[in-house]
Image (cartoon, rainbow, N blue to C red; front, side, top):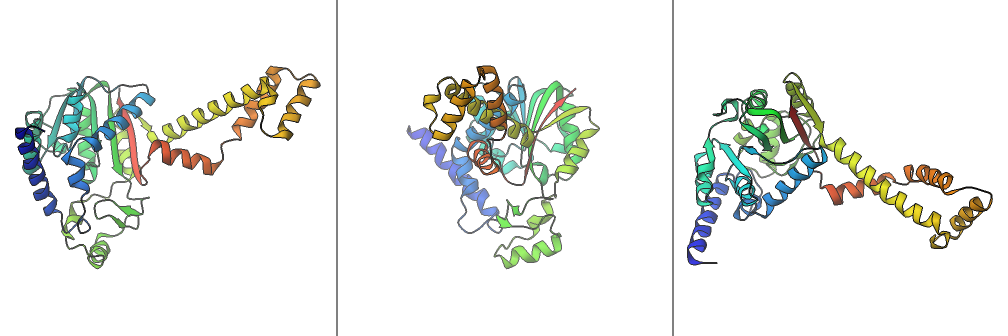
Length: 316
């Protein structure tokens, strides 16, 4: 690494440590999650891949003018620009914008809040929001503003915790009861060794129902990515199983199980053609994906975050 780049990287890391120190009473001791997410681009490259995959799955693309709500240190904006995407961020915190300047994207981060976005109507093709809505004063106003600045046929990728279902609080990194009353929660986090109980006042208990209700009257189409991903995995798994079956129907000698090999040979002997066997194969494949295998595929392939809502919203 050239000397100048090393110097800038050291300044970035020092600034990140300062910001992380402000959250010392929230996170577990020696927690490095924030620092590691922003010291290089790897984490947000994975986020960009997830956004790209979700939009592609829904028939959209991540292209055109992109707005990242709550862009923080500007790492996601930087990753977008490194991939030749036009990205802008909006962020209210001056201190984290200083990190964005060190990363070379300070000019692409506009200081502002989500409730009053400093942009004209229909300015962006894609809007992204990653765990931001729970930190704003009015989630409903932020959603309205986001749709206002989104172009017609544009898409809004939104990820936010669902506090009505989750048994985990990601900021404090603690087991959590859904919608735990904050007076009780403050006592609980103090007992668990977290000294900053005031941080709870800045967290909105966002829920799937609340987010969907807020979006319903905004002339949009919503796609729940949990359902879309599950449907995709089911179709992919069945297609693979079907191909596997077809190969063996044509050549029963490739069937590993002796009993199934005999059944296929018998069905062919009594007059079942390939079409009829293919239909039986379809029925077999529809029952092939058991729940344990299905959950395993979701965990390994999709990396769904428990307790999170992920929506793709298209503006009409």
